Every structure is written in C-alpha cells, then in structure tokens.
Image 1: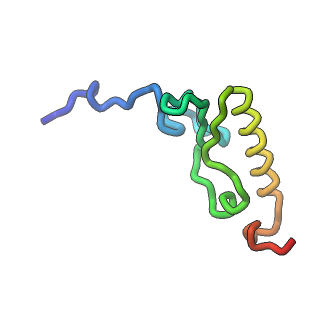
Image 2: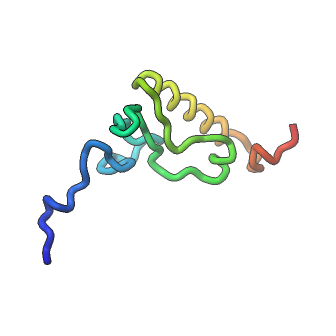
Length: 96
C-alpha cells in the first residue's frame, strides 16, 4: 500500500523543534502550545552535559511573547557566561 503525501504531513499547529528552519541562532521558532496555552520555544541542538549541569533549559515557556523573549535572553546570557568559563567542572561539584 502506498500512502499519499497528504496522509503523512505533520500538523502545523505545534511544530517539532527547528523543523524547516535555517540553522542559525540557539532557538527555534516560538509557538503557542494548544495544550498549555503558553508560548513555547526549544533550543535547536541538544544541550551538553555541562550546559545541563549549569542550569540551562532546552525548552522555555511563558504566558506572553515578551516574557518568553526575556527568558530566552536570560538563557542566552547564562550560555555565554558558561562558554567563557575556563573551568569545565560541573557547577554542582565546585566548592563555594
């Protein structure tokens, strides 16, 4: 049996992260999730163990686009600080 191309299409209302987009920047396109009614955005690439240990998030949700952009900016700043750190030891294992 051959399925027609129409039957295999992905629904457009909640796209998979970074589907059909250029690979620039850390974030995919934000979308309004139907189930939660929150603006949601995902990172384009999986986080490294070091990024997870530092507290970076791979998905950010907010009630408004402005709040989402603020949260994304905060995550970008954390990522920049992490990449500038020479110490590759996980943050939870360092002595204060």
